[in-house]
Image (cartoon, helix red, strand yellow):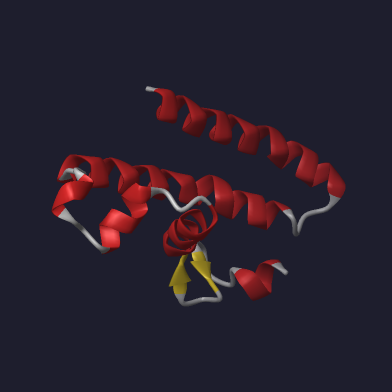
Amino acid sequence: MQLLYMPRSHMVHGSTPLVDVLRETVRSFIAPPFLHSLYWPSPRAGFTAQGREAVESFLNHCVRPFAGLIQMCGHNRARQRDRLSHLLEEFAALQDEVYY
């Protein structure tokens, strides 16, 4: 699975950046207005360039933990346990970033 889905680091199927996949997944699953305004900016949306930069920065920070999660699925159980602690720390750091 790992070699089929991510043959190159942070590239899905070898051609699509993982950040684009994350953006599209968030946009289709949650449908937040700020992601729609990235593609269809409207004056009444009220989103600034600074807000867009913050969203893009957060999505770029999400790439490493999600790539690690996909790569972890290809390891045996003992190695998965070792990697899981590191991934949980990275996800906790992302959650802290959202709050502050």
